[in-house]
Amino acid sequence: MVSVEAAGFRQGAGAVLHLDRITQVFDKRGDPLVALSDVSLNVRRGEFISLVGPSGCGKSTMLKIIAGLLAPTSGSVYLGGSLITEPRAEIGFMFQTSTLFPWRSVTRNITLPLEIAGASRDWNERVADVIDLVQLNGFEHHYPRELSGGMQQRVALSRLLVSDPSLMLLDEPFGALDEFTREHLNTELARIVERTNKTTMFVTHNIPEAVFLSDRVAVMGSAPGRILEVMDVDLPRPRVPASRLRPEYAEIVYRIREILGLH
Image (tube, rainbow, N blue to C red; front, side):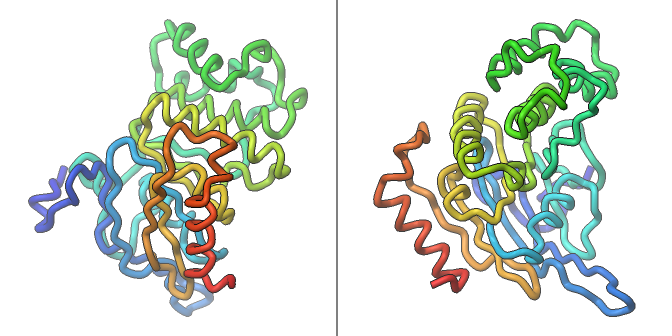
């Protein structure tokens, strides 16, 4: 593995994830499409960072590169000082849809990554802990068709957590939900991340959601995709519904909207 120091640069202090000048160019009918241009970012251990910006600014592309699912045209990504070139067990990815198997129960959907990894079958306690953490108790033997959209996303989150990744990547996981369910799951996700201290990157189009969940928000612009500004979110934790009533919350939401030209 190539180390950060050998690559000729240094990570920011305390950074566990380092993006160094990432550029991604796609071929669109023979013409180059620059999805990301010269993106650099440090993420500290246990930090929650949201990527927010308009469609087409490269948010999901960035997550795929970090996950090792897509090789950047140029630049590098390092996790814990080692270069990411392919998917790794310590990186967990949650997609926009729950992608649950309809013929498997809640428990068997959650255990799927453990089965794929060939983990020891002595996983009952781990699965029970995750089910308790996401508050799915009583639904262990239900099937996806018997669950609401919000409950299905809880199962998908459980499937991510059961592998105990050091880095969680969530790509617009609540985008298809109604506003009431979305806000409720925001509160639940904040509770879970605060309890587990997972390093998390979260993609969303929803500015209030990004501010509520995050320690920092990377505001992105498009054509080409790039980071315009990284905003600190100085809201106390734990984050609870009343956090949305604090003046600092409204100020940060307003500032991000201003950066994106929404005023």
